[in-house]
Length: 264
Image (tube, one colour):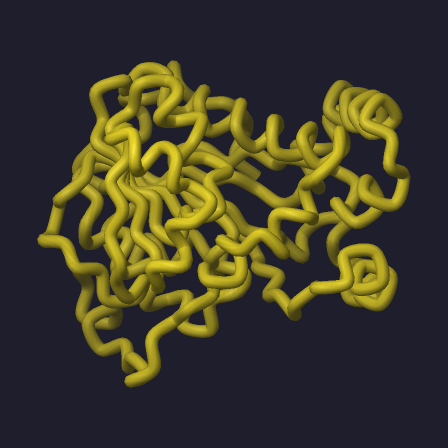
């Protein structure tokens, strides 16, 4: 790790953003056909990234929501979920009780694992809500042997209007929290401090997710996003993005066949 990264000051209070994202209340944002469609987009991109690495051991930090742990286990991956509280186990209890998935309780910014413990570390719905996100990045990189995959909303997108939609979003979702929008370089630079470089960046949607929830029509949403992707608009201004980072010693150039989209 770089000197700058090592000097990060950590609050004595643990980050617990995943307690909310692992709750039944949070899951209501993805109920119905539109919600299922949005999750399917996220799932397909992630599974495609991991397609050639079926034997990878995977740590899902803050993954008690089950959005990825469940499909990953269904596809035969070895998955461990790290949650801030025992309550984060509830939505994935079926795969934990059946032995398909391991669950650990711990601090997401002080992971209870040795360096290089997992081939791939993923963390979704976390960066945007984590106040100490640079420390979270450091920990993800520390325990990852090769890859880290995260998602985040970006201000370099149509989401630049997201603050203006906050009130509408809160009325639709009823349980909306404030969130952080990132610039791509901001996230990329933080990972580079920890010896990881961007390998793939794949935007999910052009239109803000709140608009899709407002439309309440899976067919209309999917058709609109298909057209936006076909025109190249999503690649330029889509959000949130799923980004795979790779440890510097594993050159991204050697993995060019796995790239899903143009880096911008």
